[in-house]
Amino acid sequence: MHWYEVSNIDQIDSPALLVYPKRIQHNIDAMIANVDGEINRLFPHVKTHKMKEVVEMQLNAGIQRFKCATIAEMEMCILAGAKYVLIAYQMTGPKIDRLRDLAEKYPKVTVASLVDNLESVNQLAISFGKKNRTANIYLDIDNGLNRTGCPLDDSTYSLITTMMAISNIDFKGFHVYDGQFRSASLADRKSGSDKAFRPIYGLLDQVKKSYGKDLEVISGGSPSFSSASMRSNIYCSPGTVLLWDAGYAEMVPELDIQWAAVLMTRIISKPIEGIITVDLGHKAVGSENPMPNRIRFLNLSDYEAYKHSEEHLMVKVKNWDKLAVGDVLYGIPYHVCPSVALHEEAHVIKDNKWKENWQVIARKRKISI
Image 1 (cartoon, helix red, strand yellow):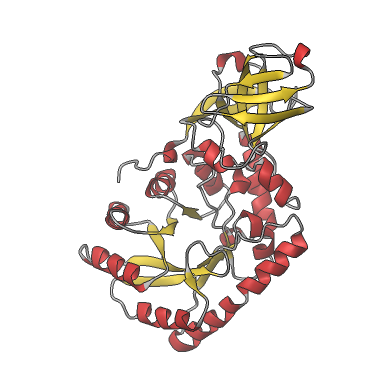
Image 2 (cartoon, helix red, strand yellow; image 1 turned 120 degrees about the vertical axis):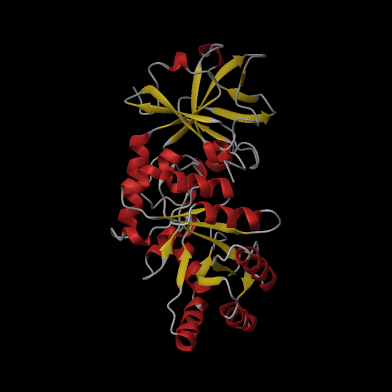
C-alpha cells in the first residue's frame, strides 16, 4: 500500500481529514535539525494543526514555546502542557480581558501578545492592572509585508522607550514576520529576508545600550524558516511544517518535510463522460486560492479540478471509464491551514489503518475563556 492509503477506509465517512503521526514526528525532528538541534530556538505556530495531541508531541520532543493566533489556540497549548505561549495577534475589544483572564487562570504559564501601537499597549496595561497582573508584549514589526506591525523608521525607538515606562507591561522583544518573500529559490528568499531583517539589529543594540536589556526576536515562519535558522539568537516560528501542504512543497523545497495530512474524498457522481464529482466542497478544503490550486490528488493522474461549490468539486479526468461512484481519492490540500479548520476531528492513521480520532479543538473560537 502507498503511505497514505487506509486499509479500513470503508469505516470512515467522507470528506475526512486524515493525519499520520509518524510523519508528524518526522517533521518535528526535521524542524529541530534545521536549527542544528538547538531546540530552545524553536517557537512553532499551532494555527495549522489546532490539535492538542500535536502540541504534546512537540513538548515530548523538548520544544517549550508556542505561537498561536487565537485565544482558543492559546488555551489548547496550555491544556497540552505548554508553559510559554504567544498569541501573534494584537488584542482588541473583548480579547483584551479574555487574555488577562486566561493569564489569571493559569498563573504558572507565561502568556504574551503582540502590539504595534501605544493605544493598544495602554489598553492592555489598564486591563491587566485591574487584576494586579503584568501583560507580556512583543512589538510587532512591519518590515515589508504591510499587514500588521509598526513601521521600521525613526518613530520605532520612540515607541519602545514609551512602552518601557508603562506600568503593568513587560516588553519582551520583537516579532518580525516576513511572509512576503515567497520565491521557490532559497537564495532569493534569503536575500530578501536578510535585507528586510537587518534594521532589527540596530534596535536591539539601542535597547541594550539604553536599558541593559537583551530583547528576544521571533521570526522565521515557514517561508523564511531556512533564512531565520541561519541567524544566531533568533527564535524561529514555522507552523505549516507540522503538516505541510502542496503549496509550501512547491515554495520551500529545501526543507526535509513530509506531507502529514491528507483529505479523503469519494466520487459521488459521473454526470457526463470525462467528468467526475467528489464530495470535497468549500466546506472541506481551503478554497481561497484560484482553481485548480485547491487539492493535489495522490491516486489520480491526468486530471483538472475546474469547478467548486459548497458540497461538490468537479474534476475533468482522462480515465473516466475506469472510475466508479464510491471510489476513494486521497489528496494534499494546496493550503492546509484553512482546510484543517473546516474539520471537527482528524482520523489518525497508523500503519495504514485508522486507529482513533483527534479533536481539532482549537478550530473553535472559545474553549473555556
